[in-house]
Image 1 (cartoon, rainbow, N blue to C red):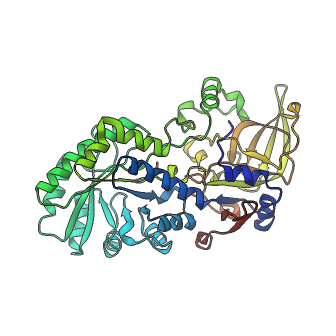
Image 2 (image 1 turned 30 degrees about the horizontal axis):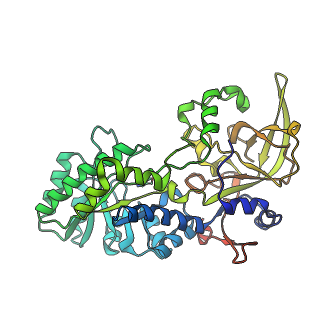
Length: 440
Ligand SMILES: *Cc1c(COP(=O)(O)O)cnc(C)c1O
């Protein structure tokens, strides 16, 4: 399942020194983050807004990755950040994002977080009337969105019709300014997002009639990422069986993330805006559209590098395969924690001349004493047998695969984030530790 690669990744893999130098200096696993790619992802979303002559606002869904350099890239390009804890809010401010460019989401926010958000003029997505009541009790002036429970949804987030009406009524005579409505849907459906946004236009107009300055609709995150080519993904889904995995571990195919996605990121935003003429309607009513992409803003902006520290060969029913142990754990590749697996192929580095009879099915385990600590249960057909000291580079891990579940279990070091940039001469790589490393 070969992953799509950005030119910077091709150049990095072709560079004879950069990867091995960083690995030697760090002395453990590490994550590479390329903020230039985050900037170009932000630009691509903005082009879609511009094509529809819409005023669009981007809030980076910060939970997807803690790296400070990503927040910097947002600050430098004028993008905002979606935060849901005091820690995330502080980190976004420390990274240079203005308070007014933050949106604070999440359920039942603590009064401390509500105060912090109001003090910094952040937009607050209110999730229930009780939360609004606590915000009102602070007597601070505040900017809010009301988060809507999608019709027919069993989500625990968002407000029902009755709760929305209750919330609206509580605004009279307060210093709380209703700026619009929001929602966030799981999954990657285009029509559902466009139709709910269209329904919210009606709510914005109604709020205006009641004298509120409503002018924005946030359709949340959930923009897909295209990790692997369609054919590879389709073949995998058709043919996958437990024998492909170490210990015959069967995964429910529906548990896998949709690693092929035909309208990723900005293309999906364009499709949402076209659906039912949503873009045109927003423009007519002078409503701004906000998005909160996490994963899609980080597409191809980073990878995770482990060093091979052991290799053994197993023979099961006459079929030999290798079990590689790397110098980290599956806690750094979060997908296992959703009873699933990160499927884009890791790259074995350095490249050595390939002969097809060396194709070596290889699964990848972590350096812990847990039998279940597998980064890849799948016996990945590596182009040659791995050797101790080789690097194994998991591609496109910046969105959720880096740090959402990391721990220093076994007193293993948490992999630092390395900011990677290409030098002006286009030949060398410059790297430095991300500031967030000091917070670990
Ligand atoms: C998680 C989350 C996001 C980001 O979701 P992605 O799927 O990474 O784009 C955006 N908004 C809210 C409210 C979220 O909870």
